[in-house]
Length: 106
Image 1 (cartoon, rainbow, N blue to C red):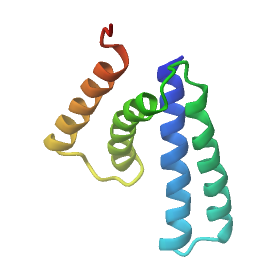
Image 2 (image 1 turned 135 degrees about the vertical axis):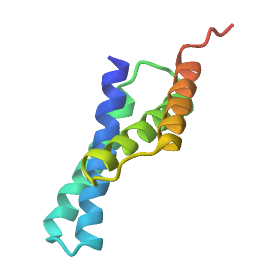
Image 3 (image 1 turned 45 degrees about the vertical axis):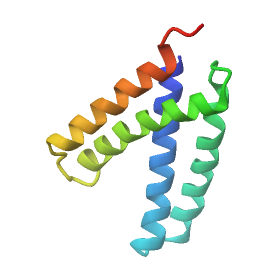
Image 4 (image 1 turned 180 degrees about the vertical axis):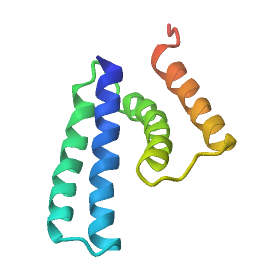
C-alpha cells in the first residue's frame, strides 16, 4: 500500500504542477491552473495516509520516488528520452528509498 501511495502522490505532484506550468508558461486557460492547484492540494494530503510514523522519513523516501516518476513523465509526456545518467540517477534514488524505508533500525 505504501508504494501505491507514493506513486499516487508523485503523479498528483507532477500532474498538478504540469497543469500549472501549462497555464503559466504555455498560455493555457486559467482552468489548467485551478485544476492543477486542486491536484497539488491532493498531493499534500496523500503522504499523510502513509503508515510510517515520521514525516521527514516519508518525505525523504517520497523524494526518490518523485525523481523516478519525473524521469518517466519527461519521457512519456514531454517526449524527452532519458539518457544513461537519468536512469542511473533514478536507480540511485530508488536505492535510497529502499534504505530509508526498510533498513533495519534498533
